[in-house]
Image (cartoon, rainbow, N blue to C red; front, side, top):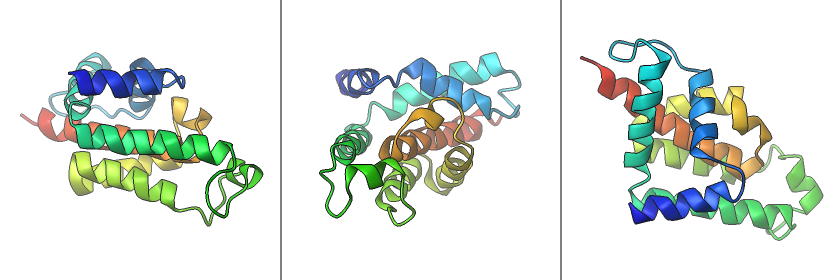
Length: 154
């Protein structure tokens, strides 16, 4: 569990808590066989999230997004000033690639489709995050929620 504590601390220092991630996921929760209530969904999402974050590869992808976000804000990304980065320019697709990679790594193609739902709607904390972090956390939520729905099937 040490791996997940490190990334969770890193995210928490940036205002991204497990509670905020879970709340964002639950804003788009849909009752499903095995998780008919939000209480059940929250519990299962928490277990799936903890399991996913026990993988060091996933933690490294999230950490990469954190570093890219910080460099973007400081204007240190190649070819993108801080003011351009702030506006989340349409030509910047590396953030989407990281979000898709995270979602697909966790939940396969189902995770990728869930990522799209969360990326487009930006519930909860996603609406407050910068270009890399909103996509990375949307990918995390998308992958975890797709596994939650898949594993809940009786």
